[in-house]
Structure formats: C-alpha cells, structure tokens
Amino acid sequence: MAAQQQLLMPKATAVWLVDNTALSFDQIAQFCKLHPLEIKAIADGEAAQGIKGLDPISTGQLSRDEIARAEADPMRKLKLADPKVRVPESKRKGPRYTPVSKRQDRPNAILWLVRNHPELKDAQISRLVGTTKSTIQQIRERTHWNSTNLTPMDPVTLGLCSQIDLDLEVERAAKSRPFQTPEEMGASLEPARETERYQPSEPEEKEIDADAVFAKLKSLTGNRQDDEEDDRY
Image (tube, rainbow, N blue to C red):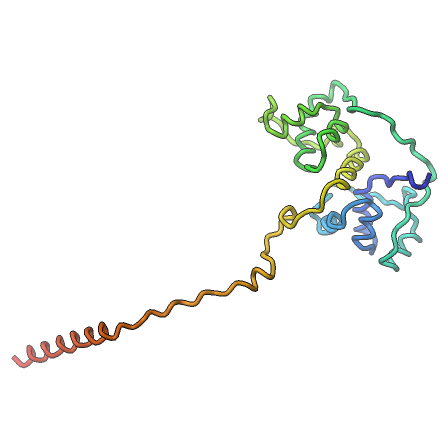
C-alpha cells in the first residue's frame, strides 16, 4: 500500500521546501518527482511564480524530524509519511465533463495550457478541460474559428480542473520528456572551447614600394627648387 502513495500537489510542495528548508535541489526533486533544473528555476524565481507553497508537514506528508535528517545528510532521500487519511484513487476515464456554463472558457484554458505547458500531450489536455483533440489542434495551429479573440486563462482559476489534477498531468509529461538541451534552456554563451579557439586577426602590413617613395620625394624636392628660383626673381 505504501508504494501506491502519491505526493499531493508536488509543485506547491517543492515551492515550500525551497523557501523553508536547507534541502538540496536533488533531494527536493526526488521527493516531488520533478527535475532538479525545475527546482533550480523555482529557487531562482523563474518558475511556479503563481503557485503558493504547500506545507507538507501540515498535510501529514512529511515530519519535521525527516526534514532535519535529510538536511544533515545531503545523500538521504526524503520518505513520504504514511497518510492518516487515504484518498481513494479516481477511476474516471475519458474526458472530464464540463458544465455548460463553463464550456465557453475551454478554448482560453486550452491556449493557456499549450503556452505554459507545451510538454502536455493532447490526451492530457483533453482530460483536464474536457475537450476534443481536434479543438486542441486547431488552437495549436491558430485555425480555431475564434482564435483572434482567445485569451490564455489558467484552467484552475476557471474551475475547469483542480491544481492537483494539473500537477499530476505535468508530472506525467515530465517523466516522458527527454532531458532539455542547452538550446531549449535558453543558453546564450558560447562554449569555452569555442572562445579559446578564437584569435583576433592582426592588421595586415602593407608592403612599401621603394620606387614610389623615392619618386614622391624627388617630386617634392623639384617643387621646392622651383619655389626657390621664383623667390630669386
């Protein structure tokens, strides 16, 4: 039964652990099932800016003693505490049912998911907001009939899905996503081996034409003699 336990709201928990503990990025990433680079981005304020931290101690997912032991030993992995209340796993399959009053918000939610979580597959977006793959494709390709009027809106804020469901889908997508390349991470500096290879070009020295120099001197001397002869008269 313990193997089936899942951390509630892993990204929100990661935010709290980054702000309130001295745990390493690797320890938090392992516990929250996230990539260490994503934890670093949270610490740098580049990710999860709109997510409020969730205290895992108050939710019974971690104990203070467990956090203290892990802080003292960077190689120690955090262990999820045995929950006092077990939440039954949802067995719902297929797209989520969306109330009629909120269906008009689905395109805006899809646009938000496509822009903010490009790692999500169409099937995952369909589960979150209860839509069809054809609609998702149209919004991706900007061929939706109302594309010009769409505004990205968080599906959690719209009430189309819960933060827990969104975090679970993002976690699943992250597991199947390959490691990011430097280009995807926005690297802009050239590798050291490229900069070491660079040598500034020296200005080329022009060859001196001796004949041209003497000819010019001769002409200057001739002009000077003519001026002196004119002064005599």
